[in-house]
Amino acid sequence: MPPYRLQTLLEMREAAEEEAKQAFSDAVRALAKEQAALKKLEDDLERRKVERKAKVQAYMSEVMKRGVFATGMTQMNRFEQKLKDDEAQVSLEIERQKETVRQAELFVEVKRTEMAEAAKDKKAIEKHKDTWKKEVKKVAQDREDMQGEEIGNALHLARTRKQG
Image (cartoon, rainbow, N blue to C red; front, side):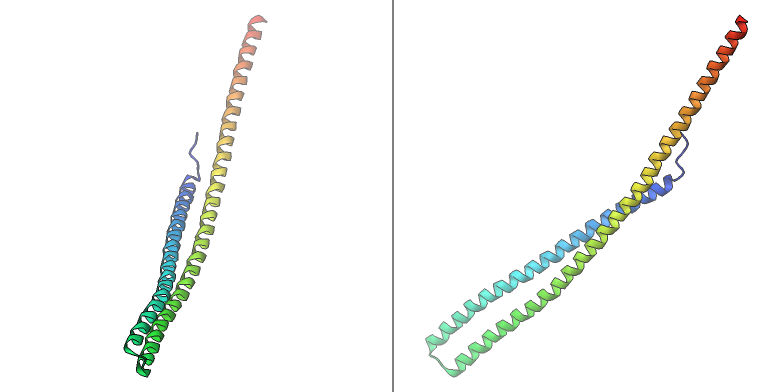
């Protein structure tokens, strides 16, 4: 069988498909990492809210033990406001992380499309190679059939000359 003239192209397409699969896999891993970071921030915010309530309650109990003073209440309000500000900062980080996750999701979709395109390109060349192989086999079979027919004709001609 003669060598397939597009073998190099097929190998290039196979390499491109593998590369696209790897890029897709990397993008999926990056997305999972970003989603984990988002979950961690959301958990941190929830923890901070629960802790704020507990800290404010503990601070309020401490102020009540010492007696209610205007300065004590003011300090408690400032303390609670600082905790709320910290929560607001974490909320901003969560929004930034959500945008990062959205970008990672878009990147995954781009890589999925590229991977599908690379697979389609490789499949087209493989289909061409299969068609080519069938054609080569058919030509070889036709040639063999023709040679067999010529041998048969030659034997028949030789027998008829001998007899005649």
